[in-house]
Length: 338
View 1: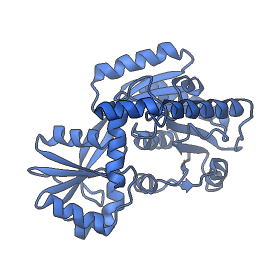
View 2 (view 1 turned 135 degrees about the vertical axis):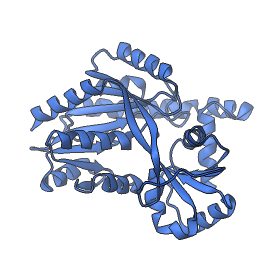
View 3 (view 1 turned 45 degrees about the vertical axis):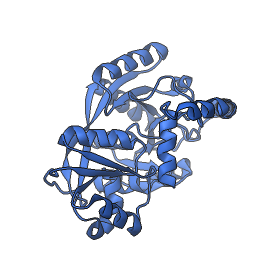
């Protein structure tokens, strides 16, 4: 039931649903206005406060304006790698409710502390105590109590700009919230390069105070097994099964890479797979290989026997604009903070 409801909401946000969808969008307008009022009131309250600074630990926030699917986790991983190459000691700080993201960061950066706590100030303090001098917040833009030295905001080229606020659309904050950001990163999976460039140029015009404007393509990097080790590409038709915010885009990416028939089985974002899920999935897939994302893989590894033939499509970041400017911004601001 949750799976079908999640997909129905995504389609509704995309403007589908016919007459019923249009009626629901009209009927939910007062809820969107109420949500917008609450967000603006909250932001004004934080605008008047002095955020808490953790001495000896700079803060880089990687966030967005929507409810997911812009590539925060791989970008946060890229930031950690960039800081390590600069000789810094980063830690990953997360609210902690998304288990898959924590597991992924631990797999990608085994020597980097991963701290999970809804209280981001306490988490940053724990990161410093663990030896870090830079805390990287995964999904930190809306958590304003902790002072940050670099605010990176991701905007997906696949999303409308400006877009509807919750519950009529996926946006958690209105577009003018980008005024708090130091840099914007337009990410794309299925959108073409021209669409991303047009959006990046628009954001630059609308927010002239941005210190960096970037475009990053999230692209297939290779095939792996559930254990993260390299593997051969699957052959023949496959089943794309995933619990991420944008399942249709994942299925389209798999289809483009393999040039074969792809059936999508979409679970809710950050879904916790259990044995019943896996047994049902294998029954549906039959002899076909199941293809999942890295976020799914770290949760499915304990159920590998029941899942049967499976491949993981790993993604990487290819910078199309602004990488050097972003690196310099992170280098300068984190150095000044410590």
